[in-house]
Length: 555
Image (cartoon, rainbow, N blue to C red; front, top):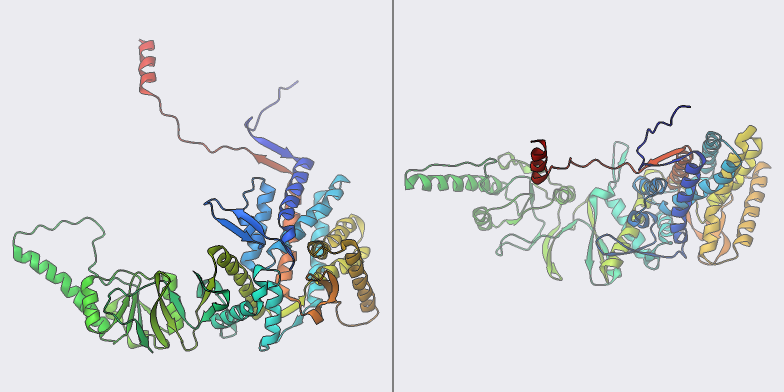
């Protein structure tokens, strides 16, 4: 009989087959259970301690899972799922985890009945195609010129958040910011809220004092006390070069034999700085902003010319000022042209707020960049308001890019569940069972909404299923219009989402369904988990005493 051959290191932990699959399912369900209570308008908050000792209080799925330290590889995949949803559409980070966890949960009985994972995944993917078709049939367009409809949509997205009691203010902030950075050139829509809609948080004041500036605010002060701090209709010049004598990149030594040579060397530096300032003064700017340093001599020349200077500006801030003021960032002072100067800024002002100075470029004509100024009682409140506001801006951005809506409040998921359960009857062979299980899994959203608002879950979900089944039967008989009945998360009763005004963007629902089903299929295909592989460190050095002892032994 042949002796067993050890291929893997004995310290390596390995899980194979059914054990690995059930382990992944358990890990996915555990992650979903962490954030299940944060779904809906009556959701709970989670308090987390981050590694630096700070406190995070939020009900945003991605923010919670980002702070949770998980070790199981299947659980890490679920955390990445939430991050991918947040980067793609910015909303639905809790829903995607809850649906994926339920998809894994309904797959467990099929695995225990010896269904092959490939069969289950095939049924899930077939169900995904039909679900996307049902979503498109339920969707209807929205008029982007109708501010009331847009406000209703964004309000429904932040109704589940901490800032829901300030919903009117936050809706206006989100819509104003997205409309400001929206650029439509040659039929191509560009809405880069990450780069051009900057959120500045200033502790103090009330949340009602938050506003969207028609321009840019940066945490900078002027470089010289004699410079002007308030200028109306300024000419703004943006530079990406230093206004001080350039240092050599490598160490350089200069040997001088005469005192006059030292004076000539210093005069050469001063002449260079003076020539750079002459090039700047020639275009008659009022404000000069540079990303590099400004020497005392350059400040002297520019103050004499009545020019205000800001130095060491961040590249991202400089780009936003350029978009707001209509300026062009210049790399070489001798190449400055009149067209590079920005003239769209209405007011330049430096103001002290609290203990710090802030520079405002505001009242710009048609600015394509903005700053959202948030005020609040504490840093924790401001951080949560910022997270909620970013979600609202993402929803507004999605609508501008794809103006199609579907009903919210669990109506969409229940319609998917009823429609797919009906289609499952026409699926042949073993695929029918995973197809039917996936259809059942979509009910988890209305069921969780009912649980979180404390109503009778079984009765509410059964009534909702009956309404959608009756609507599906009527549609089969020739009636038009999708059923929009869902759960009113505030009162815990059934409601028509059309009357309640709760809508969600189609792209968010599509991304949620696609991401959840595809991630579930990937996790179910895993049949081997190998862990415990150690990173090899540097070889241990031999101690001199030990080496000497060895030599003595050899002699």
